Length: 421
Image (tube, rainbow, N blue to C red; front, top):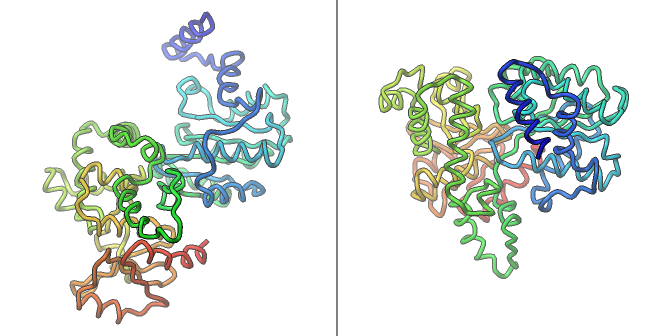
């Protein structure tokens, strides 16, 4: 109790007078809390329910490059890093003292740079800068000059670094420091197979028909791990509010938070459609420039994704982009379960997002996706293509063409994903 009171007093003093007290005993105590494996056995909560992305992280262990794990807030980045920590300790048998995790958005560490925190860690564990360590830096973009500091770690220390961020804009703005020194792995919400594992749902081959019902449940629930497990709808609202207020309003200095909330609702209502910046500007009575800036802010927070038009460079740059929600559950929470076909298309986009898809538009007809591998994909959930659209689909030149009408047709995407990996 006395230590807690002292820590509170010193924290207040440090904020009021700019004194850096997070060294010695106080920082050591904080870092020990983040790294329980220094003192006892470590088994993270839950099983490895996301084997594909976990394997990507595990396979990166021998590489010197900094592994940047990006994605929406609370999508599971921290859990994945903790599972890599467990793998190092329990499978590879790395000395736990050589493994360091810290969340850099902790206000107790706000006065300390990344380099100071890591130096304190090495001091605590009596490690020289030549000793190989594994560093897991959560929410790294909360630290000023994080790119330069990561570069210094890469160049001057014997360390494998995993770092996470929920902000694409910050990563983009500092990326020059890390050119050639990093690999980005994006973490999306759970896909359907991961959802089934989280829910512990298993179906026999003879019960294949049940998958259709489970998939419709999934489209309504989405893939945010905690929401999948709890079903608490307030969780999604609080998550979006957090992102709007902390990752957008505060960072970009937007004073009218209600405008951002209204803008987000319009984004969810138009998910799966071409997004007109000018129309939204008129609806909200804001300038087209503001509308364009807000759109990019939401994209940089990973709440929505923007997909350009397929075609020549000028067509791609000048044409409006289509937007997709990052998570189906968030979209349904704010707009209701109205259009299953559009939700299904949104899900297919998330499955092929890493293939740089673009929409095709010719003479009033549209095809959903043309991937970087020149595969044409049209999504028609339990329905047929209209005649003119079917003619465009047949006439388009492509290396391969895929029509997806139900969840079983999603198997057609497997080869594309494997080839892209």
